[in-house]
Length: 141
Image (cartoon, rainbow, N blue to C red):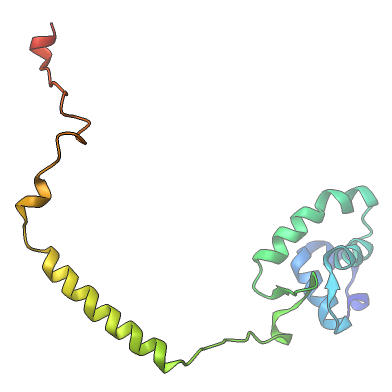
């Protein structure tokens, strides 16, 4: 459906995102957010003040709606026109290194499960709490 074929009364019932979808579908090109919202405002016969007031709200709507995508150059378009590139690096050497590291880590974990009394011993020169005295509430009174 084309924007010009939609009656104003029906446009007023539509959300900004729905109108933006119609505009982007019809134009078949990407648009900057201010250009896109200006077309919406023109279709709804909104004033310049209303345009300024609602532009930030329109940005929130576009950025949360999964039908739209913001492109590198700041333009917005329909997500269906763009595919997401998924890069998978297949480097066997890194994989082998990770396996070796994980085996070493598991050996360290096994060793750390044993209690060692030396871990509890502290050097009195470095103990900041050596002069700490604990007082009960009864002793405080």
